[in-house]
Image (tube, rainbow, N blue to C red; front, side, top):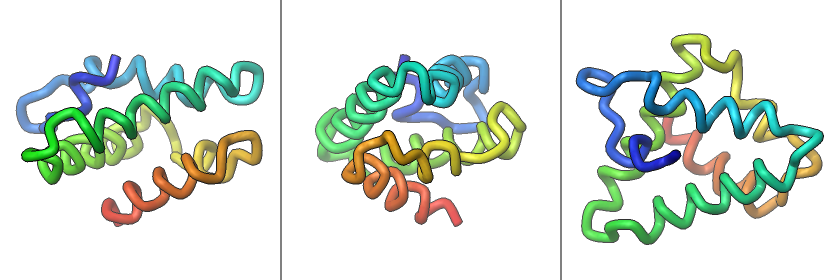
Length: 103
């Protein structure tokens, strides 16, 4: 679900490869918040541990995926994740840090 996010490059990759994961993240709130929580936790574990030698490339890929999904209108905003009271403060902080590099 997230592998294509790790090295996402809008110039060569298809948005359809990353769309299902963000839709699952966003649409699982609030009824299935545990799903959103687990998916974000897994994504951050991948970002931090998948390939530590290429961590900067992975951070860029994931940031680019989020940025592209918002810009193309797949999701209107990521505020639904950042402001979700049911989401762990730790995950919101990690997401906020990742997204702050996008602005």
